[in-house]
Amino acid sequence: MKRILSFVFVLLLVFPLCASTFMGDISLRIGHGSFVAHDGDYGLSVLGGASFGLTERLELNVEAITEITPSPLSEVAAGFEIGYSLLGNRTNESGNAGFYMNTIISAGLFAADHSGNFAPTYLTLRITPISMGTPNAGYRQSLVPVGLAWNFRENTFSLFLSLTIYDHYIKGSWRDYR
Image 1 (cartoon, helix red, strand yellow):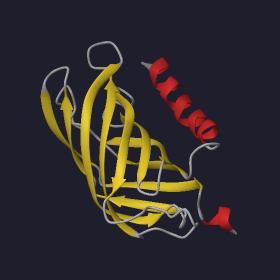
Image 2: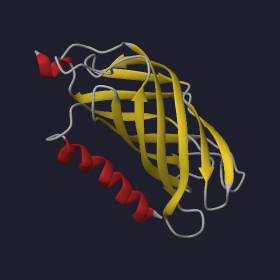
Image 3: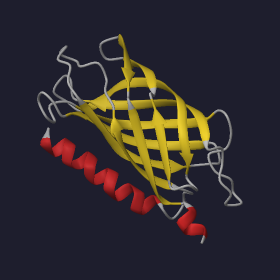
C-alpha cells in the first residue's frame, strides 16, 4: 500500500512539470474529499492533486483521496475527472479573466485498493454549485462539491461530498501576464 501511495504522489508531482509545455493553466489542489468508506468506518479524508486547463471551459483534475483519521493512509483512491464550467469560460485565450463565480460538472474514474489490488473501482459524477476564482486570479475555491460514485466492482452507489477544495494556480495566472 505504501508503494502505491508513493507512486501516486510522485505522479502528482511529476505530471505538472511535464504537462506545463502543452497545457494552458495548472493548479495544485487540496481540500476535503471522501467516498463512503468501504468497511463502513467513517473518518476524515483529504484530497490532493493537480488541475490542468484543457480549453476555456474544460479542465482535467488528477486527484488522490486518502483517509487521515481514524487510520491514516488505510484507504487510497486515485484517479481523474474531466470538468466543464457551465456558467462561462474559466479563462479566455486573450489572457482576460473568465467568470469569477461558476458552476462545474465533472465526470471521472478512480482506482482503489478494496480487494487487495489497486484497480479501477469508481465512476463518478460531481457537481460543484459554487466555484469562486479563476486561473487568471491565481486561485479558485470550490464550495460544497457533491457527487455520486458508482463502485462498479461491487455494484454499489454512494454519495460523496467535499466541504471545500482550494486550487492555487502555478501557471496561467496574473503573474504570467505581467
